[in-house]
Amino acid sequence: MLSNRARESFIVKYVVCIPDGCSDLPVPELDGATPLEAARTPVLDALAARGQVGLAQVIPPGMPPGSDVGNMSIFGYDPTRYHTGRSPIEAAALGLTLTPDQVAYRCNLVTVTEDGIMADFSGGHPDSARAAEVIAALDAELGGEVSFHAGVQYRHTMIAPAEWADAICTPPHELSDLPVVGPQGPAGPKLASLEEASRSVVPRFGLKANRIWLWGQGFQPEMPSFREMHGVEAGMVSAVDLVRGIGALTGMTVANVPGATAWYDTNYEGKRDAALAGLADGADLYAIHVEASDEAGHEGNVAEKVRCLENWDRRILAGLIDGLDQLGPWRLLLLPDHATPLTTRSHIDDPVPYLIVDSEVDGPGGVYTEQGAASAEVVPGHHLMGRLLARAS
Image (cartoon, rainbow, N blue to C red; front, side, top):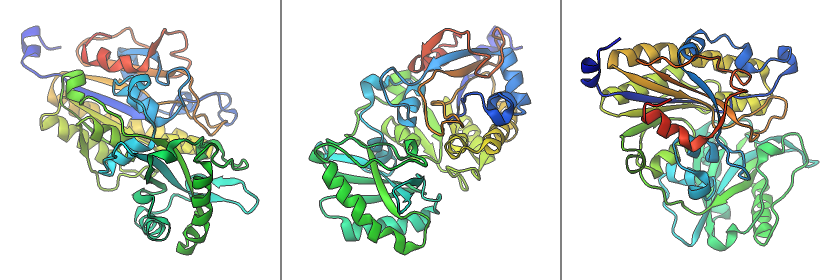
């Protein structure tokens, strides 16, 4: 262990690890265990044994249990104050700046059966380049009062006049294998008309997707920079525009990693190495976000969700800890942005387990699972960043 004098000569580095949607409920296929309990995660287990395991309410009461709300909490911004909607955050990641008279909608490419069942909210996870061709065609043929902007895989953005904001739209991932529920409210007919018109455009491109789904609307939020909020320079690595958008809105450095996807095949090592490089280059804090475990939850894919957690352990945490040790003292926060149970295939607002580890100060130790944190006091999710940076666990 470093002496106090030696310790003061180092700048403490901070890492936030976000295995999206990894928290779960007991799974029958795992004999009643959760993926966190079933996965082989020796590095995570060792970190928990020397850290502090707790329970965080990343989704404030009454707010939708989505990654927009949950990740905003993780980065230390109270969603009840700063959240205006999901899509404007994603729009920021695309470099789009909304004017006060504009609203952004998430535009999913989805697959709906002839009898109106949501067969795939992700439209078969199309290649981003091929999906961009679809979005360009939608903009050319249906644009005018609205505009369409390509994102990643099935996740895209539509910009519309502000008066289009007044609608109730069901997130498509909440409708998996269920009858579709179209947009309601004053703007509902306009949205429904666009969604219907897209059925003559999307199928021409040979994807599994056959139409669009509009939801998650909002106006551009006003958020203080991460440095203003927390007093440190920060960066992040993620393949998801929603998370990258929070970085863009708060002045964080957003790394681009070849091979980083929002799917099971993402470049785990590349994300790890980008974080270590960013910290070595002067960033005080780096966040690593991986979407794969959330996608597995939505797919109901038990084996893949367990594998995602094992990939986190073997392909990120193992090398991450070694790399952090080379840089000097460090502190780490690990938690998901929400739970995505395999049995429900949708987000829920239950509190999620978190882990804080200090390289130089041992915590009480614990087990990083849902059950391991079950008896802990529940803390608001947006308080954790302050705990991490204050070096007080």
